[in-house]
Length: 492
Image 1 (cartoon, rainbow, N blue to C red):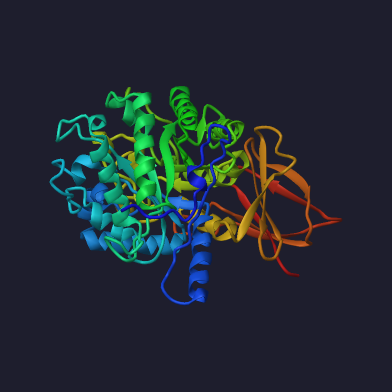
Image 2: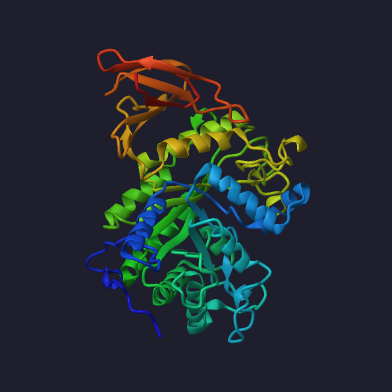
């Protein structure tokens, strides 16, 4: 029996009114109305958060790291929980897809939740130390083991999706664990991976149509995220065409995903802007999809000297440059419409895709001490970008803070400034940097005294530069360079 929907708005036809409403469901806990209200407030707080980290608890992706540190599976989960508490992020996304043929190797023969992907253990681990907003990715694949074409089995596929959502939706019915509450389901991983299997754009629309129906039959308040578009016109075109086809078919969704891994400095051009996000926001708005959110669930840049598959070296980058990129991209991205940002991993991967020179081997907030110029002594130590991330999350995350906008002097590729407001106190904070060397910037401020903190620390998290400035006639003048500066008001 399918569950009654607590709202029917999600399934209104969108042909005439193509506006998809985001519905963030509260986690209803047993007890008094006061407890339920507190749960609703807590859910709102974490759902609104801007900050996340990708694939934090997928221990199978970090076998080399576990071997080198002597960690067991549970040790790795505890390690990830410790860093999550320090960094205070509220979003993550599963690093391993929930793959149909792994869950149901033989159609009709039951579901294997303890499969070789450790689906159950991984998802439970995300929630062991409290609630997190987990994005779980569903794959229809049956071509590697079962050697079957998924599109030939519509009802079996829908049954599989309903079973997955029911197991992890936290509603008290057939749940894997009382703590687990997955509310967002991504319809496959990336466009490139979809196309590499020979699957078509039309088949993707069919897949989302089937998946959306099954997801909402199991959990009426669940949200749907579309497949991730990587950087490049073909991937964006796939996403846009899919969206138009879903609108025409009356299939609602709640979020899109854009993956990007750029160098800090590409021939003198800033690497942190994400033009695809701005283009995507404009496209969604043009279709009336104002409430559809934009995530980047895999984002980052590397430390060291990786090599492209062609053999051409990537730009070599220092830890300081990696940290600058992180700060600049996080602070800049809301100005072009990004809603949520997930950095590519706490600890980086090793030998990603069998490539010892991959950019993904040296992208983590924590080093594994191997490959692309890293050294063994850095095993399981924080990179500079770790501390930069921590300071930004503490100072700027939603809903305690809101993004005000780009500052007026940000008119070219030479200098950048972005303004935030603290929700309860209405005090304003700023992050500034220059792309072409040191220069003075003067801007209007509402307070008199300010503390300036350089967001690039040493590798132990020690602040290397911090000082105080006093405004004159509501004007603050500051010298900025390539290191982003956090500027916050202080009492006299």
